[in-house]
Image 1 (cartoon, rainbow, N blue to C red):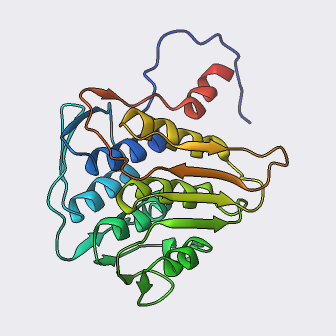
Image 2 (cartoon, one colour):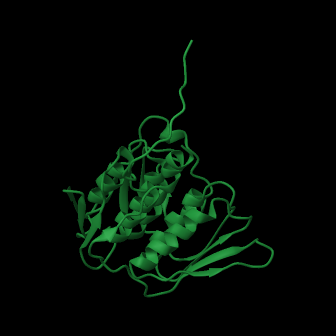
Image 3 (cartoon, rainbow, N blue to C red):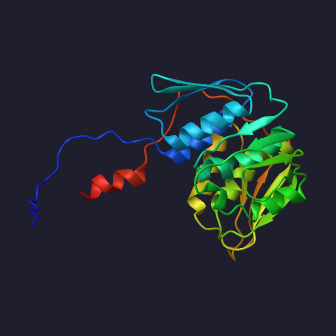
Length: 243
């Protein structure tokens, strides 16, 4: 038998940083035209995977004293994306890596190779990228080309976010959801983070809530930021708010 005694919790608990925001800010910083410093109170395995992958794409990324310094570097002849077991890292960085590098090795661990990558892979194939096989580990060859991308919106919003983050490197691009976009708040987080780093995304939302579209104009480019703050994780804070 266990006894539970009620109590009123008091005090202050520091919020953990929002991983979703950190992933996007790190990618924008690595693609920017100047260095950035990002304020990140703590890291995690998923965030480490994104930082490792950005290093594999040529960026110099250093985490010290709760600050990440990101210095965009020359793109290597052969890129390397190492998402470990982070699905967010894999889905965001596949189009990003293909937007800057002609040849990229992609690794994955655990159950990550079995996570769905369609319909994003098909859209990337239609825009100039070939894959040695359809599940990681694989090699991507060919530079991602701009244009019109269309995908169903009920599989993963991360596909839309990845293509949006890649768009400034490939020219005028529009990404359209052919069915209502699920988890749209995460796409909003992507466009807001892109705006923080200098890229405005045009959002078109028809009355029917179908064919929702996001357009990144030709000539857009990311700009480095100093002391960019990663927001707290509200979903984690909700546990303590309920208490």
